[in-house]
Length: 241
Image 1 (cartoon, rainbow, N blue to C red):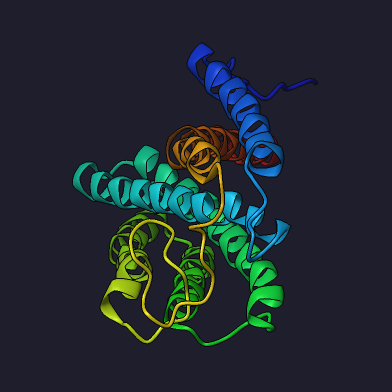
Image 2: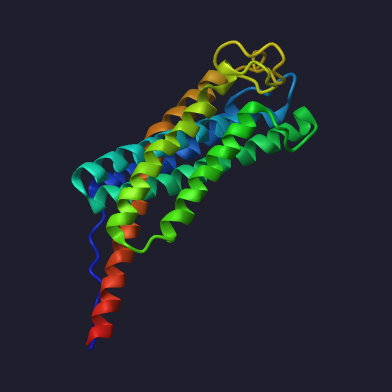
């Protein structure tokens, strides 16, 4: 007896978004590595900011979709939106970890350390731990309805850590973390004013990571979750026969 797992064809829009993501990433990578000028003060290590900063805003979008998914999952008791919220957490956490890793790589030659308990770095680490805890807690709740309700509320309130990470430099002046857009705190270390082509390389990368890339990855992750659930149903059917 042969039983095949039902597979839905990839929507044309998702295909288009996937192509845009791949081409966009290649283009922005080229702009950051080759088109933008070499920073006079920091050298080539400054180029990592063309991924470092956009990756945070990609996480912002993904975690924002988790909030939207959580609200609609509660309002409609919808498993579909619960899966979107889960996908948002996984994609957002991946982006947030990229942000932390690239920041550490930049900090080593500029600050002479891989890590310092700077307010922005600390809040970013707390944000990552908060969403990692989301995945751990979710895996420990077996009842689907209870899991959907609890994790929806958790995902909504966890977004507070994203907002704190975004605005903490403006709230807490005691930071050595530079601000790319606008004036940096007085004691910030790492300036980008002398770098040519920053806007040319940074804005397209920001646009890609903020919109197309997280939406595309979340959509793919959502489809993967649906296939996983279909596989689980198929296993139960085989065991019951």
